[in-house]
Each structure stands twice: as structure tokens, then as C-alpha cells.
Amino acid sequence: SPGGRGGGGAKDIIENTLGGKTVLKEEEYDIMQAKKLRGEQLMPILFMYYVHYRRGGVQPMIYQTIMGAYGLWKSPLFRIYVLGESGVERPFK
Image 1 (cartoon, rainbow, N blue to C red):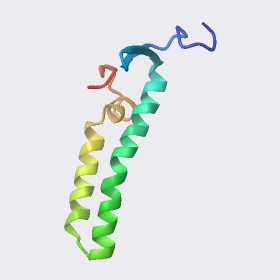
Image 2 (image 1 turned 60 degrees about the vertical axis):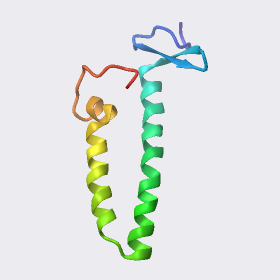
Image 3 (image 1 turned 30 degrees about the vertical axis):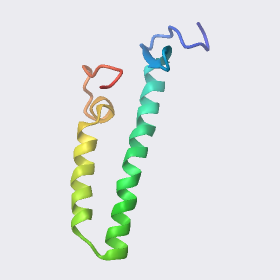
């Protein structure tokens, strides 16, 4: 259906929301997951800023750099769009 959420060549993703089902295109789902990932990374970055610039701590900055890179590497979105893996199933677990 043109302009709708069905067909169009892109795979549809069914996600349970409050007992109902919502059908999303892969692109919509990926954007939603990218926004979620961005939100999850914001708090550690703010904490790192506080500890490093306000308290002079270096270890949290090193830890956050390593853990941020590791989290990115494990992210399904990174694996799909950067590494080009095609076997990653949606919805992500």
C-alpha cells in the first residue's frame, strides 16, 4: 500500500506494544533503536564529564572510552550498517 506501512519491498517488523502489535519497516525500527542507543550513552558521558573536568579523575574517562567502543562494536546497528552483516535478525534481542 503506497504511503502505508505494508509492502514496499522492505521487510516489516512486528513489535508488541501494550498487548497490541505495531508493524514497523526496518528503517523505522533501526531509527528507533539508534535513538534508544543514543539515550543510553548520554548518561555515562555526562558522568564522565563531571568526574574528569570537575574532579580531575582520569580512570573514568579511560573506562568510558573502552566501554563505549565495546558497546558500539556489540551493537546490532553497527554490525548491520558498518560491518555489513546481513544475518542480524530484527527485532533485536
